[in-house]
Each structure stands twice: as structure tokens, then as C-alpha cells.
Image 1 (cartoon, rainbow, N blue to C red):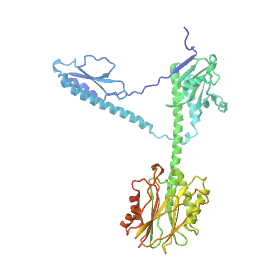
Image 2: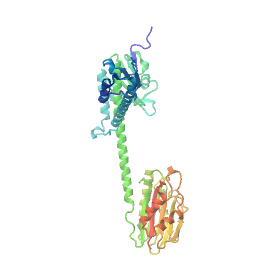
Image 3: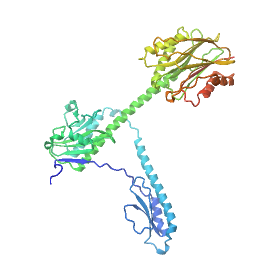
Image 4: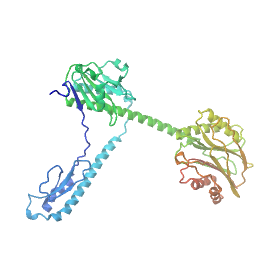
Length: 515
């Protein structure tokens, strides 16, 4: 009868090991089991369920915890005096309690076993300076060590491309360096590589008799094993010999261990590079947060009879919200509250553009509407048409109490006077929407005791809703309750009354005209 495969071709199918935890009896448990016969006249044993039960008076399955089934067996102690044996009815509760104790010990052992492995995986992967350019040398060294142990004369590592349609030589030992300049090998038709990629090691004892297996190099014998992570095939590892020869199952298993070492080196390199990129990204984010923190005004305008305070609501310092104030060259007080659209980092860059433009144009004569024109032009010029922001801008004349107000996008202003309040609105598009947008402007009068609030009222996009427009029922009680409060106290009270628990993001600025 003919053999299914010739002697010069062998396929090795790897058996995937099944994870199994083997509990170990602690000295305390062993001492309890050893003392049990002297007290009760009965033996209590832990044994596998596959063993036959011989004259057992009572049995109890133990918690397997991922291990083969075990049980607790109660049998009469043949070595002790028969008269000392207690009735089995009195022994069973004690044996049951011992079994529960053993189960708890086994569960604790299994938990520690798993946690220690998890802690081992948490060891930080670092890259020493002398390792940064050494991956090629490490791979070649692994190939050389594996080939020498197997008694082979060359080795090569081929990895799949992103489309999994070809195999490219990535590392080699004792092959010409010109091989790296050759195009990738098509996976289609590479029978040996395909067989290896599905998990089978291919041992070709005489390649001349099996040309259709498509050995990548001209050698009389070759061994091909898969290179794969826990869930993804990555490529193939080849070992070549200059004479026909067999490969034993032990040698095949050793070649697979070499492939596993290569996977470990590659995954470590990926982890190190990802860690470096994450650290660089974190550093860049920290610098951006620090820059925006430095741009926020620290000292209120030193103008007699007026107080200004602000706060950035929300937990994300890169939410794209900002506020600013300054005293213009003509002595008037300028206030700005802005909120940029988009994800946090993109919104922060948009906010940075607006802050720089705001500080630049504030040095030149302007009114509230002209400032919005300048900022809109700056944002439109510095973007590709996909950067938008909302902004409220107010200019106060401290001598007369005159207020100029203009807003773009979903910004609100509330003017609370001693005799009542008023919601200031402006139906203008966002900044950056159109290059020739016309922004409207309104003028109001702030008498002594008035409080002006500028804020962004929209919730974060993931909330899918908007805060209701601040109305007099929201604002007036807070202000009436703090008739002599400072601007900072008003900011704290309004933030707690109007935004606590809503998850609102954005800036809030309060200006108070002192009595």
C-alpha cells in the first residue's frame, strides 16, 4: 500500500496547547488532610476524577478553576483502629467544610497565577539608545542561531504585505544582500508558504523532487515554518541546507520556537515605537495646554469702578474654548469669549489662531463689528475652509458705561441690571464660514450695579443637545442674591447655578459695574 506522502516531504501540524492551571496543595491544606485520620478515623483525599473510587463513603467535586476535574474522597482509615472511627454522618459536615476551604485556596492560587502573568505583561518596554538601529542585526542573529542549531546553512524571513498578496524578504543569514533588492514573491502559487501560513510546518527533505512547492532559494533541502502572532499570520521562516537531509519533529519544533522569538522581537519593536509616538504626542499636548494656559488673562483690568472675572468650564483644557480681556489704547475695556469647533486638538489650534489675531488687532482702533471682520478674515485665510468658531466681543467705555456688542455663532450675552435683565442676541454666522460675512453690532448702556455675562451655551457634540438660552429666571435670582458680590463670586455662582451637572464646555466671563 502506497504512503500518502513521500519520505522526502513531511508536514508537521502543530498541536495548540490547552491552557491548564494545576492547583498545588498548600502545606496548611496538607496538614489538615494529614491530621484528619487521627481525629476522625477517616481519610480525606484529593484525587483526580478519572481515578476509580474504591469504597468511598462520601465524595465531593472540587472547584476545577481551569484544571482537570478533581474531587474530595472520604474513606475509612485502614491503618487506624476501627473502634476509633466516628460515624460517617458526623464526619460529612466536617469533610464538606474542608472541601470548601480547599476550593477557596485553589481559587486564590488561580487568581494569583493570573494576576502575576498580567503584571508581567505590564512591564514597561523601553528602547536603549544603542538599540535604535539594531533590529536588523538582532533578526540576523536569531536566524543564524536557529540555523546553526538545526544544522542548516542559510535562513530567511519573509513577511506578508498589507494586502496579504505577496511575501517580502525582511531578514536573512548567508544569503546575498542583493536578495533584498528583488521584488516580493507572489503568495499565489507559493504552495509551501501557503501551507505554512495555515499553521503547518513543511519539511522538504529533497527539493529537487518537489519543484511545485516553490522553494524560494536553490537548496537541496529546506524547512518552512509559520511566523504568526496570537491571531494573525505574519509570514514564513525558511531554513536551507546544502545537502538532502531529514528534519525530525524535535527540529521542526525548535524552528517554530525560533519563529516565536522573531515575533517577540517584532512585536517589541512595534510596542517601543508606539510608546515613543505616544510620549511625543503627550508632550506636544502638554505644551499646547501650557501655551493656552499662559494665554489666559491673570489680572483683571485695573480700571476704577469695574471688575472682570472668567472661567473655562469643563474638564478638557483643549476643548477649544478661550476668553480674554484687555484695556485698549483709548482706555476702553475689551472682552472676548470664543469657542472653536472640531475635535479637541484641532479646536485648540483654531482657538490659538483666533487668540493671536485678537491680540494683534486689539492694538489698532476698531469697534466690535470690525474686530469680528478681522478675526473672520484671519480664520478664513489661515484655514482650508473647514475651521469654524463662535465668538462674542464687547467693548465697554468705563467713563460712560457705553457697551458695544457683536457676536458670531452660538454665543450669548446677558445684561443684568438692578431693575431687571436683558438677553443680548446676535443672529450672525460663525467665524470662518464665509470670507465676506457681514456682522451686526448693537449698543447698550451699563449703569452702576449692572452685570454683563458672556458665554458659550452649547453642550459638547456627544450630548446631542443644547443648553436652553439663559433667561431672566436663570440669571436674575443669582445676581439678586449677590447684590454686593465681586465679579469672581458672580462667576462661581453662575457656573454652579447654570452649568453644574450639565457637562457644559466653554468659557464664561462676567463684568461688574460697581455701585
